[in-house]
Length: 637
Image (cartoon, rainbow, N blue to C red; front, side):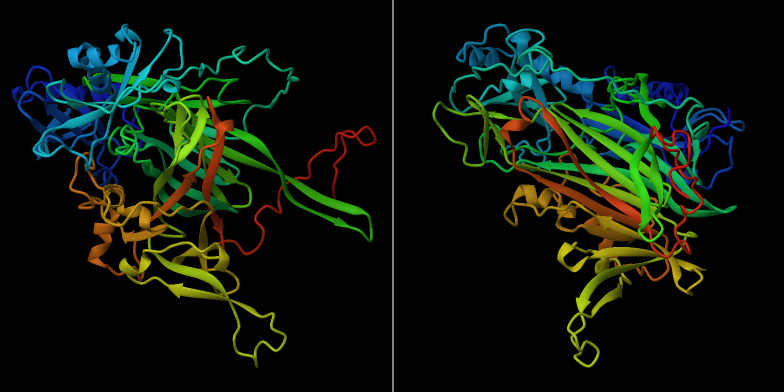
């Protein structure tokens, strides 16, 4: 089958490229790998069947060396081949799950760790978990050039226990990721272990409640169609992609407007996630992670299961990734697609005639879940019949907790169980939206509301005007939301107008924002400058791929990323726009979120704003009434 340039890589494509890399003796006997993905900037100009350019990262830990290898997959006109090796600072590549497991085993085998655990009454080290954490910005003095990690330590009472409910307080191993040796151990003192179970399995806290059956059926099958990675539904079409770093990616989002296919976005993805913890506790103060750039969403993607993660008439996409040993593997059911009822789309009751008109909303949902150690994150892109696109991010899983002494109250968090505190923390999601509203060239405006101050124009004091400000340069386009002023942003087409003479456009609204509660100049603040704004905008550059920069692990703080891209201050006055919205949530923990956290939902929307001449859902048929008096009849006119 001919692969589209933005289709996910297959296991065979990955394996063929990795085999060529393995054949090079410079990588040593025990190489490690971190990711492989299509080089989209090159690939999008190619004709189908030519093979695809890819980038993969390989490390030789024995030589303290790393490379980004540029290669080509096989195509009708070529065999798989390598085109270039580029040196990478050896400490900078991300950490794979396989490396994480090797680090945990190294900690369990270290005598110093065994001794420290024994002081806490832990003698069976097989029941100990160690999660290697990003050390970026906190490298010990004199070790800045080594590839390092630090560990959070957990203990299980039994093999099936929830280890994340039993933190081993005060114990912090510092580990060399290349030698897999514990190079130092911080021991801040013994605290009591959690005395209460953190198990969340059925029956742990009493018998299960009664829940009536709920069935979701589509007798005629789903209302969407698939052709490879291309999906079409209710005038929408898009391609489903997948990358090692971002997980699911959407490409070529278009709307069929009565036979005219109109582009909206060229690319949409959750580009980075930053999670800073806001507690000086010795086992919490280093916690601030780029979960995508330092670990990777792709290999952390969970397999989804019908009846559990997804209900109804479901279709799935698998996804292939490379693991830390260079082995290609497939994540089954990595991406879920389904339709769902979403209450009322529009309704009006004519009280003079008694007639009611109503249409029910249906949405197309494309989703995936990534498990990052204790936390689980769901990413749900929804397409609506009125032309809206919504991203909903679902946060769940187990909060990352710390130990606390008997009788103490947490100063920077919340007690969730005896001797267990959940620190205050935040989650930031940096988006990448390659816009293309009615064509590749767009313009960006900020829109807010103001009271009309001219008394001659506002004699009754109730005049409110909408103010549009063009954002003409990259520096000007670093913006913050202000709900009190109804602030949003508008992406306008270059030359397409609606029937009112206005340029067609899409509105960008961010419902969830946060400010960083860290002092200016702190490591937490300097590591992720992009969270200082709620929206950034740049001119498309194929080399500017990630909001936090190309290799954020143990990087010079703030030296790469969108805040450096926009220093070029290129003109946005008619450009291929890339928007970088930042969705944020400040998480003040609650006891009700323990031992497992009910889903917390945040997100953003893209809404047509003059893109259509009128409500585009007027052609929807009326739903059927199921009342006893008029079963089978239309419930509106």
